[in-house]
Length: 230
Figure 1: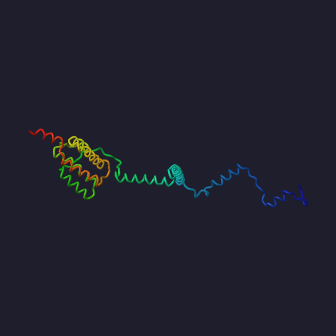
Figure 2 (figure 1 turned 60 degrees about the vertical axis):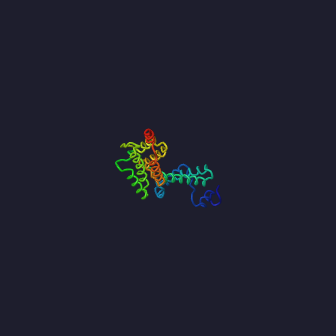
Figure 3 (figure 1 turned 90 degrees about the vertical axis):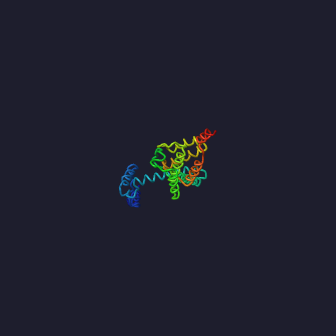
């Protein structure tokens, strides 16, 4: 439609907008935007591969935490209390049992290359105990118990005997102390070959066992005494 003066409506619209409107199809526009954004200058501050991996990892951990918090009694607070309880239990076990070693050794001979008497082992045990070396004190006290039984001929002296073997053999002649002897042998093995750490309680228990066994009369001796009676 022509207006007076030869100007059409379309011409007036173009002059009013000053710019000619551009109607670009959708697909070419998207490809053009993708090409533009692929320019490295737009990605200079993007996180690197490691940072992106860590972001995904922490997002995954956060999702697990949210799921666990929803399932735990008391929600997030209940989950925190459960985690603290597990950590406390682990710390208590670590303190009680000591630091486990990666490599466990098979039980070796109880005395190794030492040739001390029972009294010598007790003296060494007391010296270790005074210095707070409870592991060494337990080892020497167990050796004192077995050496004393050999000195009294309750056990035949036998090279290469292990703590477990000594406890089993002595327990047959001292049945009243079978359980305590086996427990002492287990403690000896744990601290000697299992990498665990002894404490004062374990050492004092072996001291009491040493005194009790020293005063006990084995079945073999009792049988001989009865046979010698007129």
